[in-house]
Length: 114
Length: 108
Image (cartoon, rainbow over all chains, first blue to last red; front, side, top):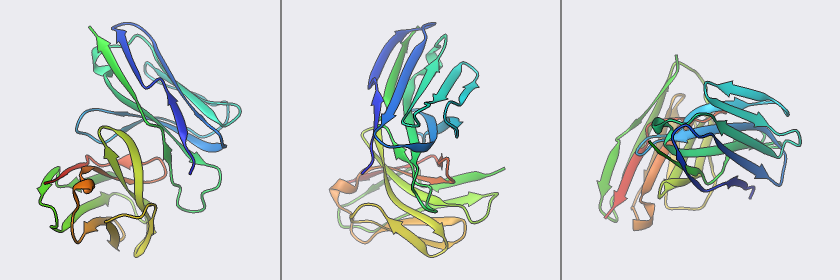
């Protein structure tokens, strides 16, 4: 089946540093989504991207839908301790019919040292 | 506004016992609904999805089943739980996968 390669798998940073993570696919996606999950809770949608080249911000978070439609990145600027969690990318492959199923990356665990 | 409810939050069940997890969505109609399982805090695996009442598609062969008896209700079931069914189960709705709070299932 289709897979997303999400990297890095984990990051340890100091408060105030910027963070960058990305996802790549071997096939074309028509939607890219980024989520954050905290322990014991469901993932929360951070940013949704629907068009190739689209660049969207949500506070200190910025994400882009790659021009090739096979990748996306998420940046977090000026990290704070509450940014700690697991960040997932997800994408909707081009051919899905009516189900609108998503493919998820394996997640990136972020640790922020105060 | 739309909300998704999932319960219970945690569940400990013996091997061989039945399972029923319920998910309901409010504030929308005819949503696409999904059941995911997450193991060890990583990797969401799609188990089932439904585009309408009585319409269930299974993604992976397993010991679980799903049903959609009402437009905004999605149920995950098992007749006999296995140890390998332990995990964090998440219900989601809509294309952008808005998730419920999840159920932590431990089979002992």
